[in-house]
Length: 305
Image (cartoon, rainbow, N blue to C red; front, side, top):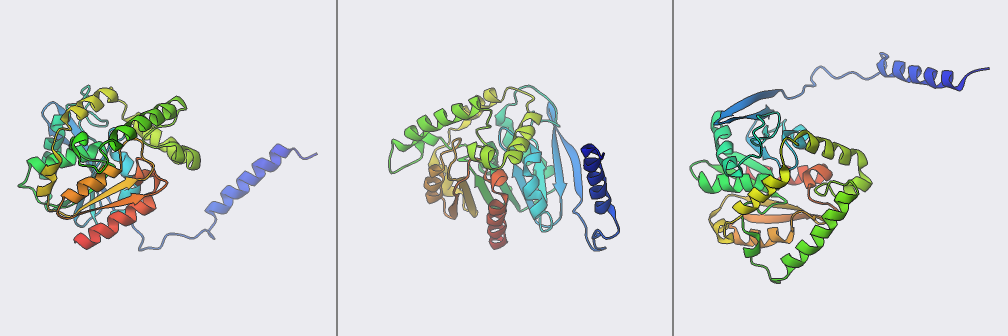
């Protein structure tokens, strides 16, 4: 009698052999992968990790509160053939120095120091959530550095949200109430709120990876950092009127972490800004809908030059 286990093992071996037989297509001799340079930026009291991949005009990626440099894997792979992609982990985030809860007041200075360290000029910046606060403060406090373009994903940066002019003054308070309840419900069910229920339901493997990247950066109390960031969100919206560089806001239509309608109001204040809303998408558009996000970024940067 033939044991079913023998059949399963035999099938697995046959599959493995078929994968490595000469009939398997090989890479062409011209195929290559952009190289990555890794390093640490020495700052007072800490070291900040960064990676540089590809070649071409520089694009810097600033991650959100619950992630790190790894979160941009789908963007670097897409853009590094045409751009020099710079990813970094904010101070306090591994694999940089563990320093307890970092002071977000230092984030903009860290970004400026990294740009100087890498001798970059005429940069483009893609910022997600907390990274938008880092980026906006950098732009506002380092006018001597030229920024070619801004992409602000699911973020209002360091703007004081209640001060954003809205047609319905009650809309933000109502959104906050419903979004808070939705986030609490997701957390109870083991869903990462920034990833969202739709990602957990439709893309469970991606949701698992999202949580794994977040857990890799769990070196300190992120809720305490969230409080410190909120204190610094004090800029009046009118400060944006002086930012003339091309700016693209990207928002998820089902976001429960950031009110996407704020981006519409902020873009109206800026001389050269527009908004793209991605439906059936939550806070992390870049992670959940990379094909759409990457195309938006690529088209925008191509027009900027």
